[in-house]
Image: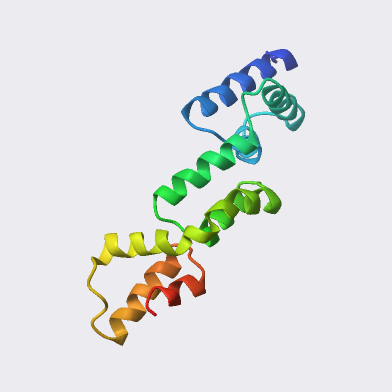
Length: 149
């Protein structure tokens, strides 16, 4: 017994709406998740409809994602990398991160103090360890170095 395209559309739409109910998702994420169970033309139709109805928005996803990652103490390099992998355009990422450009040093200081306390590094080895930690969080090299000047 085969199901018709309308039945597939309804099932794909329900799956997409369930995913969106949990958290904002980019179009690419939804395409990847739905792609394992539905045909590409059905997925595109569903996602186009959800976008036109305002239920799926890459801009809303971008804003939510950036806010949550900054609250986790992640830097612009890591955030940008993750967003590119989720199908967000570089221009949109740059526009969203631009208001935080002057705050990356303060965010990095907060993350560093939360991890290591307010004591300065005891020696060069400890300083290197802290710089590697900040770099692994996605902060640029200039921020890593300014923290210890």
